[in-house]
Length: 196
Image (cartoon, rainbow, N blue to C red; front, side, top):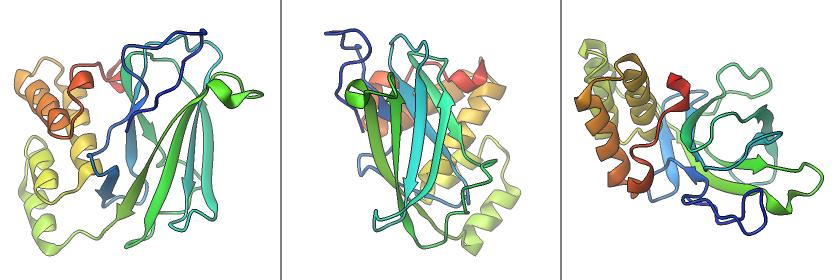
């Protein structure tokens, strides 16, 4: 999902806006209690900016988590790891949650902030997935997750492999192909900030 707001300087529009790495349905399925979320951060001046992630319950009535953090890497893909967040209860199986991610340039005037949002649902791994993963190499895991529609695990496992093997052309191609399949061709070759 793309945001469509000016970033920082009046009239400046980055070549590519803030984007959540999600399928075209704007929703992702996960096995994780606390999944990784991925975002493309535009080519903009991030001095004194803050990233903010808010997670709502499925009725959008209650905020179950809010976290602010510094943003350092522009024109790249970041992973937001919520696994060590003490205030975030684990995502419940079978429930959907709405999250909103913002780049906040001025906390007192959020009119120039950029936002994206999407849905996430946690499911349980069936016996077939467990068996396949138990016997798979790390390089085989992304395709197993993808075959079962587990978006967040597919992306996270492939990103981890790309950081571990940065010169592996097959992994780079797999990453690009995955993003192209969900309409994210314009950021398919952007660097992963977590690898630096």
